[in-house]
Image (cartoon, rainbow, N blue to C red; front, side):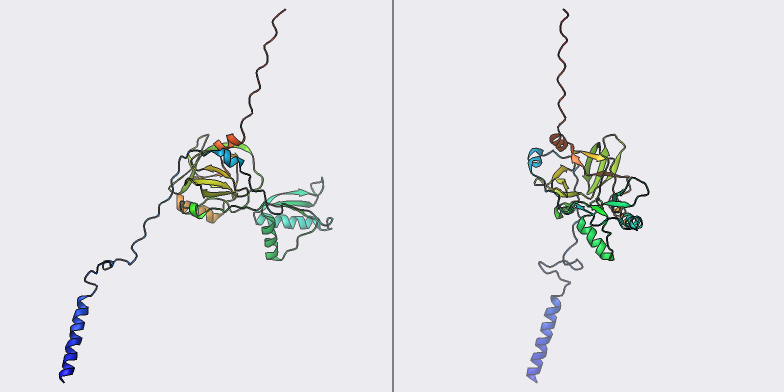
Length: 298
C-alpha cells in the first residue's frame, strides 16, 4: 500500500512539472505563441533598369554567332496532283488557323494556279510533330521553308527572378518591314517599357519570340538573339529596331501582362538592338571627299 501511494505522488509531481513547461511560457529559440514556424515570406522585389552604360561591343561583335540550325527548306518530291488546288487551299486554312503562315507561292503565273509552296512560321521539327499529332499526310508536290531552331532560352532563371513577366510572343516572326526605328527600352519595377524616339509617351513593350532575356556578367538585364546567341543590348540603352514590327499576342499573354503591369498601351518593338552596338556593327559610310576646286580662269 505504501509503495502504491509513493508511485501516485511521483505521477502527480511529473504531471505538475509538465504543465509548467506548457507553450504559454516562452522557450528560448522557439517561435512566439501564434507565430508561424517559418515566419512570413519577405516581399519580392523586382528590377528597375532605366539606364545602363553600353558595354564594349567590339568583343561581342567579334564573337562568332551560332549558325542557324535545323532543316530550312523541304523540296517537292512529286509533280502536282489533279486536286492540287484543293489541297493547297486545305493547307492554307490549316496554317492560318495555327497562326503559322508566313506566306505562300503559286505554281504558275495565273492567279488561279494552285499553291506550290508555303513559308511556315515553325521549325521543321515542330511542323512534323504538328502534322503527326493530327495524322495528316503532307502532299508531296508542296515545297516548304521553315524557321531555324532557337538555341538560347526564352528567359533564364536569373532574369526571371528579376521581372514580373516576360512579354515575348510564343509565335515565330517571319518576314518583317525593315524601316529603322528606335527609342528607349527599359524595365521599371519588373515591367518592360518603351518611349519611342518620335515621342508619344510611355508604352508597355512587347517583343518577338526570337528575343530572349538574360543577365550579363555585370548584373545587367540584356536582350539575347535566341537564334544566334548574340547579346543585342542592355535594358536602359537607346535601342534600334526594324519595323513597324508586328507580333502575335495571345489573349492569355495580354491578360497576364495587364495584371502584372497595368493598362498602358502595348507597343511591339520586335527584336531591339542597342544603338551603340548597331553603330559599331554597321558604321555609317564616310562622306565622299569634296570635289576639287575648279581650275583658275585662263
